[in-house]
Amino acid sequence: MKLLENKKEVVDFILYKNEEVLVYKDKMIIGNKQLPIKEKSSYACVNDVLYKKHISEENISTLYRFDGNLFVEEPFKYRSKKYFNLHQFSSIDSNDGVVKVSFVDEGTENLFEFTAEDKYFILTYDIPNEVLVLIEWYDESLLFYTKTGERLWEYKVEEGREIHESGVMVVDDIVVIPCTEDDAPISVEGYNLLTGEKLWEVDDEDYCNYCYVIGQNKMLYALSSYYCDGGSVELHLCELNPFTGETNEKELKEGRHWDDIHPADTVIYGNKLFYVNQIKKEGCSVGVVDLETKELIDDTPLESQGNTVEKPIVTDDKIYVRIRELNELRIYENEFK
Image (tube, rainbow, N blue to C red; front, side, top):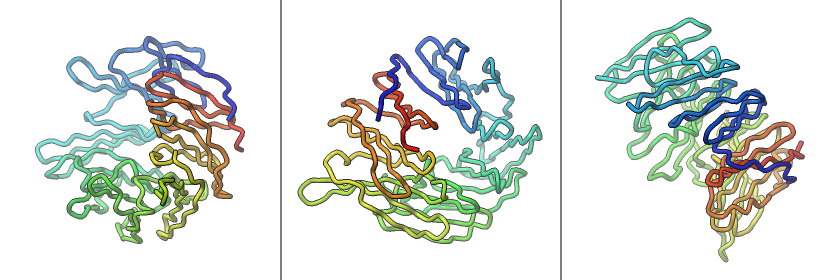
């Protein structure tokens, strides 16, 4: 990979509507705008909504949305808040056995509540099917509701297992649910999002990754490493069909530097899978897998021993890689089109 630029003292980086958002200790730069930074503030972008979460001295969390010039506080009814896009957002409160939900869609607020022994939080909202997914505090169940409060169904894990919440995803009308046991992936299941009908289950440990990423062909992909005789490690590309549960895999490379790669460090852009390899003792790397040919086409060392590298952010012409402890943002040319 060709390094285009190396920016120093960058404590956070976000891509907002294809515009670089650079966060420093004392300021934030969005295009040609410069904004001050408050302590205990964090920033994120979800579906073209750039927002700030600020925690006060009283430990009260407030959410602000960037309106193109400033961060303005949004009117949320309950404390636990989440954006799905600029026009749809929700807040939730779980107390005394009652869960209250406020869902706002294009300015119209829908309110509903239900009784539950445990606390629930908002996980995601699937826009095409208009299904709101709530997850229980201890990752033991999922609830599926319409935005107006019609309860569709509930998913509960087997005893001793937990839902890996960051791996739950919806593909068309299929919800994919990965589960863990003792922090190890144990199964991946597919259900009809609207009815709760179980369609398939994968319990082969080779394919039970914590989370997959979805390709433009709607197939799910993850990278996995396997220890071999002699101490070497093989890097494999796993493919999962979310509609049938069918699995495939291919060995990409053998070496000693693959034994700490994680599927959560991957992102798909076009027909390429970009990853960072978090092997801290030997130095991390950033690489690219062609999903059409299923070949490893690049693996560039980052020479960042002992540091954490964040998931790459990819555009048509650039690959952004931030090294957290160094507060360093490296910008590479995206030649993989």
